[in-house]
Amino acid sequence: MEILKKALDKVTPTEREIAAEKKFAQKLIAKIMGMRGKHTKVQLVGSIARGTHLRGDNDLDIFVFFPEGLSREGFEKEGLRIGKAVFRGHKWEKAYSEHPYIRGIINGFRVEIVPAYDIEDAAKLKSAVDRSALHNEYLVSHFKKGQQDEARLLKQFMKGVKTYGADLSVSSFPGYVAELLIIKYGTFESAVKAAAKWENGEVIDVEYHTTSQEARKKFETHFIVIDPVDKNRNVAAALSQNQYARFIAACRAFTKKPSLNFFFPKPHKAWSGAKLSAFLKKTEFMAVMLGYPTGIVEDIMWGQLKRFGRKIAQMAQKTGFALKRSEEWLEHKKHMIVLLEVESATLQKAKILSGPPATDQQNSQAFIAAHPKPLSGPRIENGKWVIEVEREYTELEKFLPALLKKLKKEEREGIRKALKGVKIMREKEIISLYRKNRAFQQFLTGYLKGEEDFLDY
Image 1 (spheres, rainbow, N blue to C red):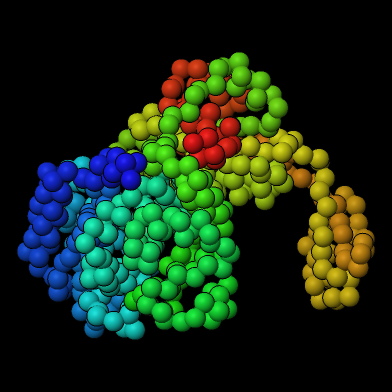
Image 2 (spheres, rainbow, N blue to C red):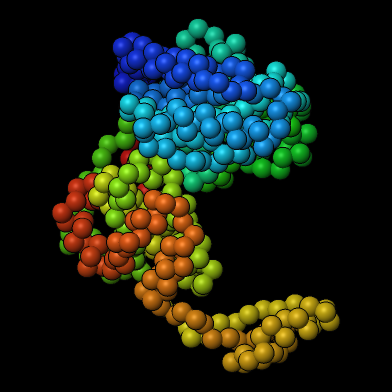
């Protein structure tokens, strides 16, 4: 109990902070309501509205509601117009959910101005984000006294063991799911004890919309949380198998040996330059360094960097460089880095392409016609057509510059600007940055250790 009290004291916003958040949110709401337009109401939703946000997480999700009868074109046009008007004089970005909306930072607050249809029942959904207001209403009406603090503890625990966040780039537990777990189990402690016993196919259904068997058959995934306001939706659908397993393992470790470190992990003890150099000689490691673009807020830049890193990793894998791991790192106004760790940085000059079964006449003809000058083949192996073709790139060091040149035309503004100063980092450059940058030392040491932090608590 002492551990939980200390954790809660650290994550709960002060009364002064809460008052400032509410005052600024009301100021934005009043500003929007004073605008001419087709909107019917404006509402603060999200964790601040529910009193479950963590200290420092000052995200203001302002929803602007429009009548059901408004066309989709008119809905999007009005939503963007109002959002841009709110951010006049401030940096903003057009972001996308099911439809576009405007987000950015005003006076230190991360603000999203999101259009939604004014509905009272999920059966009348016209936009995926319409559920958010219904989620807000459900949680506010179902939280019992003190459960907002229990939700804060669970969110911080998830953060501490690196399993928190709705962004697809981290594939972790959304805040809404954490809050539903408190509705289900009552307290943080009960939720962790229950999660320690979860298995694949666990079903959480706080409104008893269906049976566990029916839910597993319908959703066919490792973890299912039925949305209480929409029985046809699994709100944990974006949670990866890896993050689900990590959370369960962390809960088991915490129940055996509770520690404040689960909530606030200790910094890694940085490796020496000599130890780093010795380690890098045992693996194939390369990095892409970009400059930090001016005029782009960090929260927005992180999203762009994560997408960019995933794209590089996927293309390297597709080209034949078997990927072991990849990761992104950002130091505000200084550096952005994408790390790539592969099994081999060089490939054989030729690769084998396996085609359709030789018995499939139509596809066989198409496959052979698509590769008129192979190095070897076509031949039949195990009933399928096989050919050998020359690789375009056999070295990761030469592949990356060509890929970056191509991606520069496709990326968003922040990455396009950052690519002007792009640099491929080899072992020598990585070690040089490591020796003089403490933040990078922490990041790279944790990455290379590759151990779940909570195993040491």
